[in-house]
Image (tube, rainbow, N blue to C red; front, top):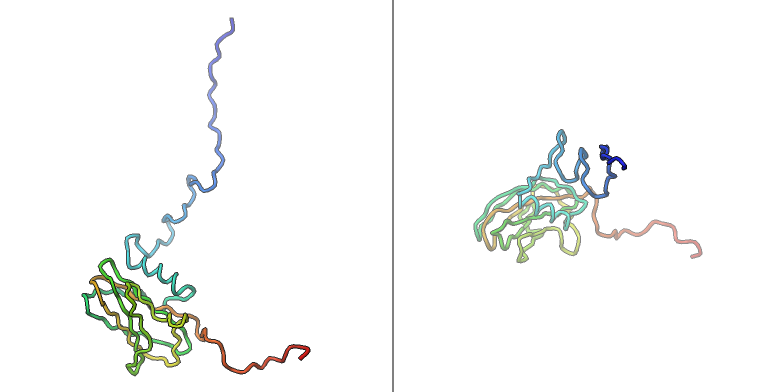
Length: 185
């Protein structure tokens, strides 16, 4: 009669890493890592996340020239801020409203007090620098006044100025061409 065989202990076999699956001991994308700088935007910061989304939508490739500035306004009230504008540089100014904000507006005034641009559309994310599908590129520098107006609703808002490289004016040049004519003409 054959002897019964006892199962032999086996060594666990290494498993092949599966693409897209977390691997033990490996950093996970989007997760904080010990010893690494942590994200500056907390996960529950509605205003900061809205600003980041609107920057990607309206000011992609432009860098912040002032930090995200926050405030709280009641309906039909406003808050003014000073913004330093450099001539020859292009700008977009973005506002975002919190949960109770239904209509937030922005108006920008030059150093003489003349309004140079505004966004008074009925929304809670106004953007200055979208007229004619191009950013605002003032020829006069100085201290401009930015007015944030709570037209409808009440609550927290954020506003931030983004700038392009100096001299990055998207308007086509009107100077005559000095290039030689193509051959054969």
